[in-house]
Length: 230
Image 1 (cartoon, rainbow, N blue to C red):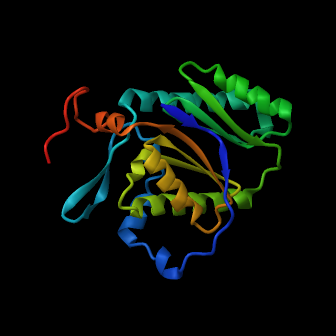
Image 2 (cartoon, rainbow, N blue to C red; image 1 turned 180 degrees about the vertical axis):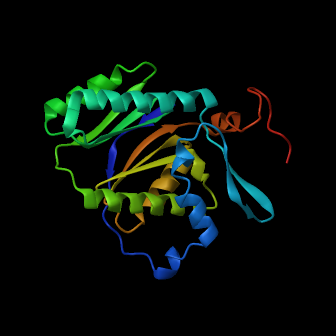
């Protein structure tokens, strides 16, 4: 499995037509209400029926790993406060025990200190440090929340992607995509995200898996067994 951490600069594209953002109320509510979709501890049943069947969003992490990620995020928050104190402006997001740091660090020394503190948390495999030394901008934070919702809604609408496979984090117009996905899914999600108005750059923090590994992740399937016949 390969981790892709290199930032991918993306030019802004034209604003989508109004029709393209007229999401169905139910679908939009499901996505906007599922900010915890990427961090929940158990498969999440979304309250809606599509084509006569219940929509089920399942996480590709094991339940144990999901709990570990939540624990890591709580501990990372405490480590950040220890380092930054009242200057705190850092968010730590963990997916499959890889921690993404975004936000503001007043200096390179603070940036390095936060990374070192978080990297020492038990079970953390690696840290992707995307901290900047820019000042806090609350308007930007609000815009980033809207941008994250747009990205999730776009991934939700894609018929060839499973939205629950992705964790979306936005900071100052930069969108970070995390998840255990195939190369095709990674490329597709990045392309869709690039097409959204307001996205300045896309950073891929994916754990790339093979198609065979993806089959092994299917809920309810015992390791090493063949997929059920269609």
